[in-house]
Picture 1 (tube, rainbow, N blue to C red):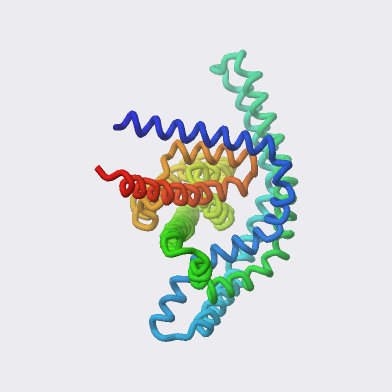
Picture 2: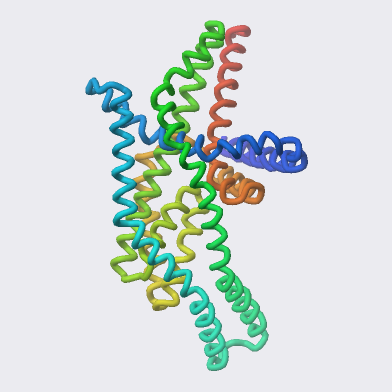
Length: 358
């Protein structure tokens, strides 16, 4: 049984890789479609994420007989209040820390070069044949660090372009909250009874999958970010808030995110005081253990039930094709496709049992 399970996982991973390669070869065919999708992607995805976050609150308000429009207004006022708190108390500190971090990157690169040079000159235990390798590593790392401000500025400038699309998110969110539950009945009226029941079941499955992933990942990311912030502040790590916010964003990416999140904190700790880098690693391990053993099982459970090997394959393929956005949306896209395929496969099995009873 175990061998069969592993065989299915390996075959799935191979087929997914082949599908990605095929799509990459004919991607020119999808460019007009992708251009249109990209134009509405930010408000649609942003509105969808906020919809799943807001829906439990709206359902709670309706439970206490609050009219839907009034409930939506209350939710919007709550978001405005949260936005005010963030811009008033969190954003100024994060901006100040971020600016200082970017300004200090060249100094950190120079310090790294001087430290390694001094270490090489005063350590006879290093074999001479390793010196060239160490020099290459140091030079590459120094180059990356010196180029980091430019990369960061480019990323920030690209993010500014999203601001115009963000303006549309409240409109998408309003109509999703107002009329979201009318979509399935609207489509069902054009289907026969059997197809209508099948579509309703499929819609519930997809909705459950998206709800589990979005709420689960948001909760996990916030909890991990708070744990790291507390830990960084306890050990006195510089730029604690900025590094914790970065980790919170990176943790949205399954499997790879936590590893990407710890790299800047380790580097900052190493340049501030080498022992802090050790404490950063310890704090990260503790936070990930708490998240993995207590938060994720209770928040997400086994709703997605995706094998780790499949996750790694998806992330590697999506990252190479679509960059950071591919890393973000590879898992939920796969989970939705899996729910759809599983639905039709189960229906096929039921029809087979009905037509060929034993």
